[in-house]
Length: 296
Image 1 (tube, rainbow, N blue to C red):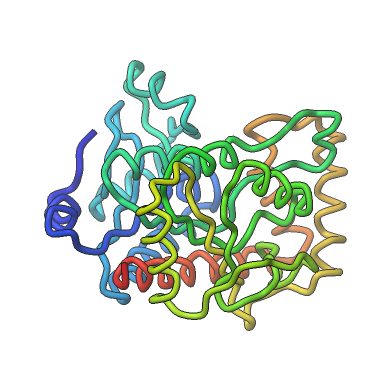
Image 2: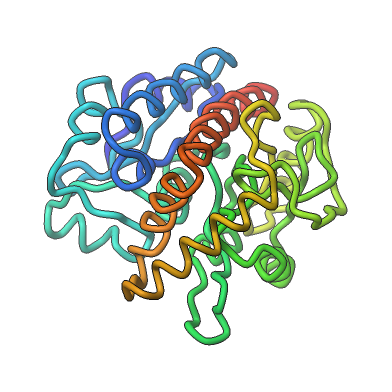
């Protein structure tokens, strides 16, 4: 593992650092949108008074913090792979380059001593999971890695009620940030109420500190809705998701390929609306995570 000098110095001084994942660069968005949004997310973290640490694996080395040249190279690398926790040791042994998922990023961030992490939306229980058994490793990682994850809920393509139920079973706190309802990634609401909320970065930081002081092994989910001006309407989103899922089934898309395929299909079906929402929530989550990290 290599930690960028600025990140290492900030951590040494107990300063605010926000981890950022890199699968949005390698698999989530097309070039040049991926590089533009990754740069904007880092800028949002800095705007909040914190230091960004984009996490990726470069040539078999876990990198905590990338410079502009490395971000640009990762955004166009032809051999980049998608790396969850289970893939890290193989990627290191084979000198691979790739983007870390939510689970992979959480694991690396915790190893580096970073406690705040911003992403778009977590993975969760997939629709028809009772048949396919497809449940994201993000949920297990949240249950065993003490990092606070700021996100816009879980991706709209998932079974959101089951995802929330699974998080409860795993003992992961799910706290709404200025909302009393679990956000549905592209949409601000899902119809699923939350028991716990916080209104300010200071309240969120106090929650994280209490969680860490108790030495609870799990992470926390800070659910921050997509900005209203970029949000999609729930009915339109559900229609687009249904069409994308049908296409995925017809083409036999499975495993790691499911989420990026569905997100591409949603962008096409919604005529770009889902992509606009995705970009907006990524940058907004980075800003909020930076504010929380600074308060923490």
